[in-house]
Image (spheres, rainbow, N blue to C red):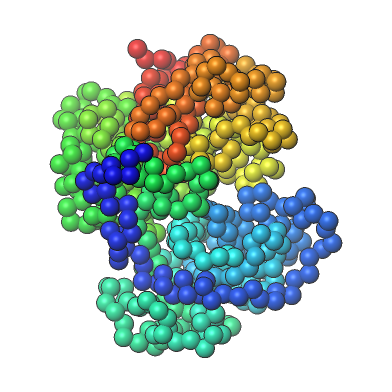
Length: 583
């Protein structure tokens, strides 16, 4: 690394370039979290020698969900769900009827709770502390609660991502989102005295007396303030993932990354993201038009999707182009989210602009809702010159897991898939603790009947990527790698054969830690990338794993280059379902 290496606008990674991009509610949220204190919850844990081995302990949330508590609220018509994102824990309480009638939008109450999340009983302690809130909800059935539970201040503002997820998971009224001010009231504080907090109306004008805007919520008359349109984040997701270690382990060297070619290439997307707040901003369409792309918005059952089409393709519709379905959220909950999605996959914008493909952006937050992408594709095929035999799908992190599931459900329309930021191993739900981010035996067996070319691209600083040294952990890792072989119809390898790969003469195979039929080390953007192919039972190299040194948990230009180079090789015969390898 040369710490003096520079490139135009290299300071785009620094916070001063993003001043004013955070919602005005953030200083208030930060104050509530900073002054939060562990409270007596009244919950008495059952006798248990090791809570981490409790039958209802969930690896994903590191908490215990006692079935009798969950069932109690279910009997009252409320669905309890404990969740985690970006190592930030949260709990939702949603009226059951809200899931059957999403047309009825409900207010959202958000409460920040300080609790020791290293204690597996934190979820049940939270439920005990907020029992009166939950009883109020059970009686009224007319709002949704989100409890953000943390033992430290969320300086990375992951809570914004949680609220975005809640707004798509549940039928939230985006114009009625309220922040619980009980901690402020308990401290005897006035809103006007909260450092840095400036309350604005929905047009962005400062309100002189924010305390006059305090409302009372529900039968408990909780003090709340309306944060609708004031909580969103116009910062960069990619930048946030680079500048925090929350999603990266100790192997990630940030300074090396920032002074590398990959940071230089990634900065293009950040500059675009810094410029625009919304896809409706003046000049947004012209930005892509200048690059050579036609930008259009569409809707499927009320949900937004985005399309980017090479302009020449519209002039020559007889020349069909492949389509890449990019699973990245572009819904209306936070208008900057759509801009962030394009920044995240900015290298694909270049690939499309060069006439290689058509891009379709869409994602929801669960398997069934993501099936709506089928409707999006059908509508796009009616409007744009898409080659239906060459439709590919990709997504990052949890959207990478959703990509795997979409390809499993719809192999008739998908020619190949790319999951980014995910491990090569496949964990079962009882280990991962999250049904959406794991692969159960039924899904595994279903996938094993499909010839689905798949590339998995990730970074060494992400968890479960390379084989661990600890013998017990390695035994689990090898077993989960065998599940990947099963899913991709590859010949099975024994644990001994998998372990032997760690001593291979081939560097890529040795680092990745599994036996490969082809492996190589690639140098690009100032880093090494380790690529390995495994041949399936038909003798075809339809499974590829790539991991990069010193990359963060985000999408990098190299990831897109290497995955597109893999995806574009395949088409699917629409009559027989057979995969055809293109020359």
